[in-house]
Image (cartoon, rainbow, N blue to C red; front, side):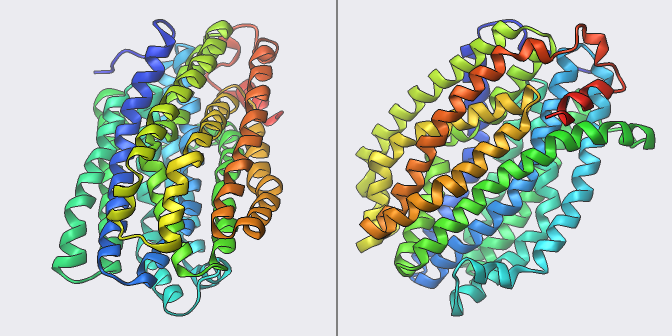
Length: 465
């Protein structure tokens, strides 16, 4: 039986944002926690090249995951919009067509990446044994991308229905499977990095299955793709997914720039960066969940043409971001020594962990603002704004600041430059998001029916951007 549809058109917005973000973040942090434990296990092996290989591989996997995030944004935005318009049938059809496109595109994209792993890893600055290990790890994990994409899109569809709990449980089950398999494969079977890769593949299969099951049971299921429907939904899906994928790809490109700059300071510096890279999403999982959590809230109210509520939702999300950053930053600062000890971090590796657990964690507020703004742009018909801001941050903003920081302060300066780029473009995103909401009413059709089941006007609205 289908459950109630548009849940965010009434009720306290701050409460909706808090519940959606916290439940979404629990699932995310289950995955991030496993990645974090992976790093601890790898560090326990006492081989610096393994930790560095994970750092290089993480950058490539971030790149592939970004493709899935973009498709998930499109699926969630379109389903939430249909629900806001009161068209449950259209929402169900978009379940089917979005997931079908996700599987097809995921297979093609993962194949292209897999065939070019060696030059990609070399481009990041990896050499010798470290490069070989990174490629071996990626050769196992990359083919599982279609499963991850289905899981991510399924979670986005569940959140579009307001069902953050079931979306959360999908990632929790995946995290539990990974957590159980990691020590068995890494230590029990002595597979080391290969064991960590196999555990990740198993987790991706689990997240796909557990994300799809609630959709089938509670939200109209997944029907047989129809050619007419596939053709109809391709323009709005592509109009959101294409700029969203470009937006998400900006982050791994920026991370690649950081990794390349960090490689100049040796494997200890790259290992420190890898620890920070795994620590930040675990510590700020709530912030990373914001975009996916806020998007359905804004999308449903935009579909219902309640622009005052959309504006209040943006303000509540930024307030929520500030509160989370202050609390988490205080905890990180207090625990910086035990955190570094977990990895037996010394020298420059330890210094970088201390830097992140100090002032850099506070600056993560601006990344949170950027996440919220991205959700605003993607759900209000301006997805390319997210693209321009994210690419600006990770290229013209980051490159000069990272190079300047590296020249002045060494490896630590690389992280400082990366953080300052976030400050600059997070502030710009906040200003632009407010302007987008202010003019939102002028961009909407005059009546909900004008969007129609055929989605033609929606396609024009998005493609016009």
